[in-house]
Image (cartoon, rainbow, N blue to C red; front, side, top):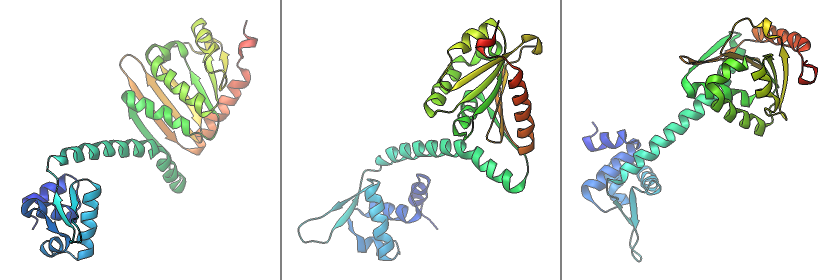
Length: 261
């Protein structure tokens, strides 16, 4: 059975051998590696490896005097506070990397099982994640957006995303209802990577704060208004193709800036 000190050190994130080694040094002070190995009842190679790892974590220090055998002594336990902080930072980084890669894992799953997949996102962070999924696209992004409604609540997020997309060189074709605000907002919006066409406002008889992006076999839906911030990422080849074909037809009928009256 593990002693309380070892259990506490395990909670801090040390491995079982690291915890046993550090706990022993805390209790008995400076020791030779061979003595540590004997008393924690581990093979010398295992104990030596744990000591090297604790040295790297800056939780023990190695004492070498002349031609004598080196000894090891523990650093003050308060050092574990920094260890905890580093562990939390790494966990946060790992979590961010996992969730940024999750759509790709879902895609692989869907391809292997032929099942449509849906991933749901919420809040500012969720909106950013679903937008940044588009930054992984290997194809141009096709988009429907009601600029007047959507930009009331998402201007800052959209501008940051737009700059990242521009830097990544990912092109987008955007279809929007023709309004004075939409013309003004989109006229100079990342023109190097964004092509815009308009359809008459009468084809959008209602105002919607939702947008749709079509790319890489995916559909990305985002809704941002006064009460709601959600995103949905849908993976399905047939649904993707349906929306892509509908987009291409609408695009062929929509008007670029130089054709507007």
